[in-house]
Length: 324
Image 1 (cartoon, one colour):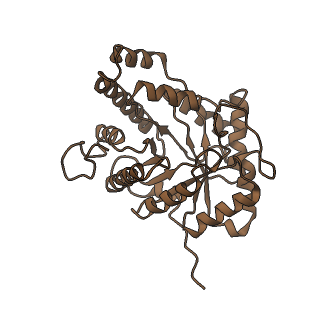
Image 2 (cartoon, helix red, strand yellow):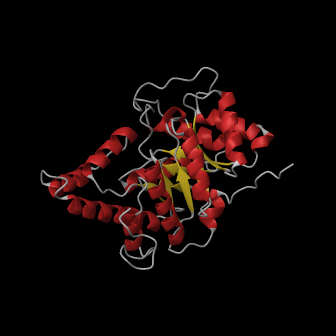
Image 3 (cartoon, one colour):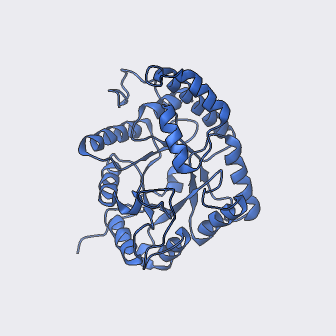
């Protein structure tokens, strides 16, 4: 009988290991839509490996729309080698299907899991409907995993929301939902994107005050370097995050009515803003920085370079060249 795959380095262990810069950083990839995009993503993963990323996460499409590609990409990323975190949502899955997916992750040696309830397919902002035979809350999946010995290798993380989840009626409810997942067995959280440091700090304070045991588990801030006004507007629409009015005004002024013609100026403002955010977060003692890369490497590397954590973008010996 073949030996079962072992356990990966956990995310908490990855964050505690020595890093090339002043703080660990990690990256998020989305399953690409075609083979060419997949190869570009893997080149970016290779580059981030060379820069010393502590781990890479791979997201999961609504309703399992990218299930097979998520698994394949996560396996390939893990062979960079990069400690790999796979996402899993409840949407359009029965409990039996969720168990099957968990077993497929274990068979692939992918033991770091980010548990999410997930958004409805088609319209992410539409009503959330529980699948017949499925689960309603992410905390229920965490409880299932923790209760079944075959899943004991998993270390579980969750999402947290500095501005509150857009489906929560208020921040108090959001705090309790987050704590329910942490109390069920999640060991850390990665935040939704945000653009105001105060939202992160208040989230950290709320959780710690409400539960001095589980509320102090690591909260990894999620950052999305802005390279396009249109793109960031779409991302905040889907996430429920708020784009600060003064930042949006700066981006609009830089676009000057023609975003394509002035894309370099927009990018410059976005990278500068993300760098300033990262500097303040590091000063506040965050456990790491998690970059939402949109499957590209350059913007995140530029921020890392500004922080003194990466070589400059260009034609040097680093892996990050070629325009991806």
